[in-house]
Every structure is written in C-alpha cells, then in structure tokens.
Amino acid sequence: MLKKTVADLHPYVPEEPLQDLQAKLGIDKLVRLSANENPFGTSPRVKKALATATSLPLNEYPDGNANALREAVAQYLQVDPEQLLFGCGLDEIIELITRTFLEPGDEVVEPWPTFSEYKLHDQIEAAKTVDVPVTADGRVDADAMVAAITDKTKLLWLCNPNNPTGTLLKPVELEALLSRIPQHVLVLIDEAYIEFVDGVDNPSAVQFLDQFSNIVVMRTFSKIYGLAGMRVGYAVVPKSLIASMQAVRLPYNLNSVSQTLALAALDDQEFVADTKRKVVAARKSWTDFLTAQKLNFYPSQTNFIFFQVPDAAGLHDFLMHNGFLVRDRLRPDWLRVTFGSAEENAQLQKLIAEYLAAHK
Ligand SMILES: *Cc1c(COP(=O)(O)O)cnc(C)c1O
Image 1 (cartoon, rainbow, N blue to C red):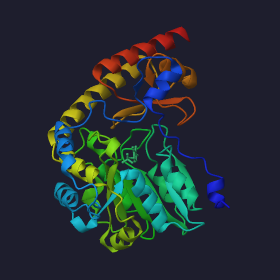
Image 2: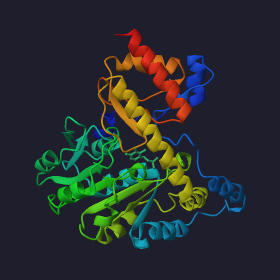
Image 3: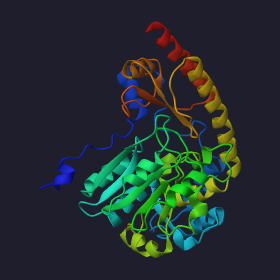
Image 4: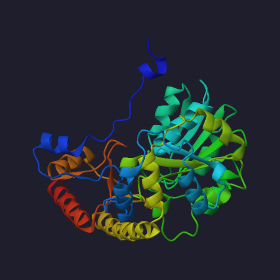
C-alpha cells in the first residue's frame, strides 16, 4: 500500500520532550544543546506581541499571503515582496522545494555531512542524493560539487554556514561556485545560521539574486530569533518560479499567531545583535577549549561546533547523565554541541575535560 520510497524511509528523529527525557534519566535538569536553539530565549517584543495575540480572530483563517510579515521581510532584505515564500519552518520550505521540482530518478547534489532533511525528502520523491564529502578541514568541496553535476542533476544544496560542520563559504567563494553551476540546476542556499557569521562583510547570498536566476535563498526564525516553537521560515525565490511554488504551498500554512510573533521578532534587531555577541564569545571559548584539549574541530561560524572525540557515544552518554544533551551520530566519532549560556558552556567544558582525563 505504501509508496516504495516511504516504506524504505529512515525518518528524521525529532528531539524528545525534555520532561520525558529527564524522567527517563531520573535527573531534575537536562540542558538541551543538541538542537541549535537560542539559549537566551526570544525577544521581549515577542512576549508582548503574544499577550496581545488574544485579540486575534481565531475563528478566521489566517492571512494566506502573510502580507504584513511579507512586507517587513522584503524591506529587511531589500527584495521584492512577491519573491518571498513562507513556510511552517524552513523544514516545510525544504519539503515544498523537493515536492515542486523532483521527479523519480532526478539527482540532487549536496555536501556530506549536511542537514539530513534534504536527503529525507529526496528519498520520498524517489530522487537520488549524490553526497559530496566536505574537505579535510570541513569545508564544502566546490570542485567536487561541480564535478558531481550531471544532466540528471535537478537541485544542488548549499547550507551556508553548513550544519553540522559550521563552516562558511565566503561570498567570493560562493560567487565563484555559483558561476560554475549550469542553468538547469537550481541551487538551494540554506542560510539558517547566516546571522551568526562574524568578521565577514555581507556574507549572504541575497546579494547574488540578481546575478544568478537559478538560486533560492532560505532563512528561519528558529535559530537566532529564538522562535523555533512558532515554526516560521521563508525563501527568496526567482521571479520565474514563485507562482508555481506558491501553487504547491498549502494556502494557510502559516498560522496567525506565528505571523504576528515573527513580525515582532524581526522588529527587534537589538535582540539579534545581542544574541550574536554572546554566541561569538561562546564560540571563542569553545575554540580555545577544544584547542587546549587537542581535539580536532572545524572552524565554526554558527551557534554550534562540530568536533572529533575518540569515544563519542561514551562521552554523549556521560554528558546526558550529567545534565547535558549534545548531538551524536551525525558522523562516527564526532559530536555537535550547541553553545549555551556562558555558565552552561563552562560546566559542559569541565565535564568533557573530566571525561577525557579519565579515559586516556
Ligand atoms: C534548524 C535548521 C532548519 C530548520 O529550521 P525550521 O525553520 O525550524 O524548520 C533548516 N535548515 C538547517 C540547516 C537547520 O539547521
């Protein structure tokens, strides 16, 4: 009865509710540093907007075009409001893209490792994922990505900065890569973490939208804006494709509360800047720590860091029983840690040092 591709699927495993995990482990407090959430919460303006959201007409369908949010995002990014496509999280945009473009047998080129949902949806559409391993220093291998393109290639994913490696393709590198990708390939640039990039002028691919007609740029409110619970993501889509993508999108995919709160979040760029400052400081502390521990890691431009440890599963378990959930099984012998508050980072680093010292 099932589609064959669905019968064979390895589903994405979402985070287990913290309370359930704590009860299972028999501990009072588990700090989740496995999902790249914002440990500093969200903007106070969002909370204020939530208080006034009680006056929203909940019996009415939301604005199917998210017009207020659309105008605000268009202004923020300096793009045409017509080019924006909103989703119930960036997750839904990923699904929408694969649903709109992929036919059985199409090929999709992506770096490896990268965000696992791209491949999941390739699989559902019976498309073939072509994994292109990152270089030894964790960067997207531009030459190998280009070499992997065939006349069957329909999509090419670039997560920039990349999850889980944390590495960034700088604008000059990105532009050079884009100029080598043929027009029949749609390039999908996932910028879920772009706001965390530091020391690079104008890192976003939004600046290339006029230059290349085959790129889509995606963003989310789940990471730096601290609004993962409200599920809002969006894409900037070439004008030639937007009508078809809007036709595939469910008409009321973004509920009215989410629209209202995302608008409030966007309005507080001070919160965004403050989070970035804290994340940049955390990044330095983690880089210093991993260097001192002589552990191999990739240079991160995100709110997490990916590093190699001899016994990743053992360390993961030790940390979990001591109150910290980090991400394992993204690649053998590697862990990904989301930066927490300064205090959480210090506690977690102490635990890791303790474990490593005891397991020499
Ligand atoms: C977190 C994440 C997403 C999903 O974002 P949502 O808007 O919460 O669905 C998409 N892409 C990458 C690379 C992510 O890390």
